[in-house]
Structure formats: structure tokens, C-alpha cells
Image 1: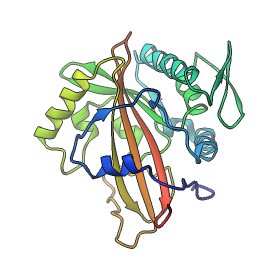
Image 2: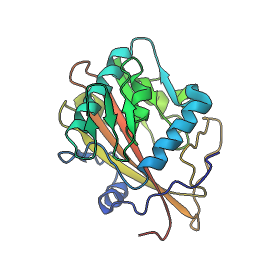
Image 3: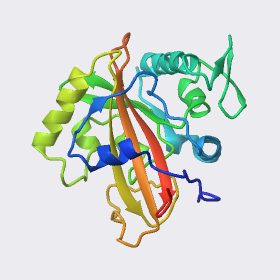
Length: 248
């Protein structure tokens, strides 16, 4: 269990508005806004480190053949960090916005990403008729588990989501087929939760706990989709915001 609350002060208004729109409601990512660094940065990265140290296999996974896409995802995100003022990049390390220096280990790209960014990173590659979850860093799942989804196609990943019918599945597949390198897209969701834990794994057989009107927390995901130019894989990045209701 998470040792303490890791909360942001607010959910950005643009994110609230996006969460209120209908699926898929994708919109272009503004220049320089692929990644989010907020007031929970240090706390969330510390929680990622704790989860990985406790049981790496619960939160990091890869299928055979996904190595090139994972390596490219790291390079693309390092390039993005280099364009920002809050990261400092050198030959073999990165100084994070909180002042911590992280060695870049290109032999373990998902672990390196866990030490640099708040986002969880899901890598999907076209295999046959659908995109398949080929690798992932998933420290903050909202009612799903990496073990049940890794290596699965999009339609299987969304079991048991009741609203994910054939029509929505086709629209999502078109999105993953159509997203262009250099033109990332994003959407958001927002739900009420009874507790603030970032790591909330639920198996497909478990009953989902739906937040009640008086639930004390709001949880919102900023979900970003972008294509890796070399491998053609698609990255689904998830930045999680959790606030106490009534916060600014």
C-alpha cells in the first residue's frame, strides 16, 4: 500500500474540460507539452521507485521483439526533455526538475523512463489486424493489471469495459493507425475515488469500485498518443493527477 498521499493541488482546467467531452475526443498536443511536470513530480517518481523495488514484474513488462520500440521511446523522450528548461541533459545522465541526477541506462529503457517522467508508458505495435501492447511501464494503473494485458490486442486490453463495443473499437484502431509521427494527440478522463493510491490494480474478474458522490478524491488521466518515427510503434502515455475534492 502507498505509504502516504501523493496529491496535486489541482487538475488543470483544460484537462477537466477534455475529460467532460465524449470519447475519443482527441486533440493536438501543444508544442512543448508532450510531458507534464507538476507539484507531485518528486512524490510520484519516488512511488515508482518503491513499486519497482518491491516487484518489478508487476509494473514493467516486455514481449519478445519490443526492444527496439522501447529503446526508441527512451530516445524520443530524452529529446523532449532536452527541449525543456526544467531538465538538464548531459552525455550519460539527466538532472531532473527536482535536482536528482539519473544515469541513462539504454540497456533498460523502461526503468530509465521510470526515473525521469511521471507518465506511465505503454508501447503498442501493429501485429496482424490490431495493435498489441508489446511493452509497458505501468506503475499507476487505474483498475487494470499489466499481467493480464501485456501481449494482448486492443480489443482484449479493454475487457471488461462495458462501453467498449465494436464501434468504439474500430474508432480506436483507426486512431492508432492514423496518428502521425511528430503530431501527438491527447485526451483525458476524470473519476471519483475512495482512496488516493496511485497503484490500483484490479484483475478482470474483480468488481470495479465506482466512486460515490461523496468520495473524497478525484483522479484524472491525461492520455497522450504519439508515433515513434523509426519503428512505427505507438506510445500511449498516461499522466495521473489525484487531488482531494475541494482543492483548487
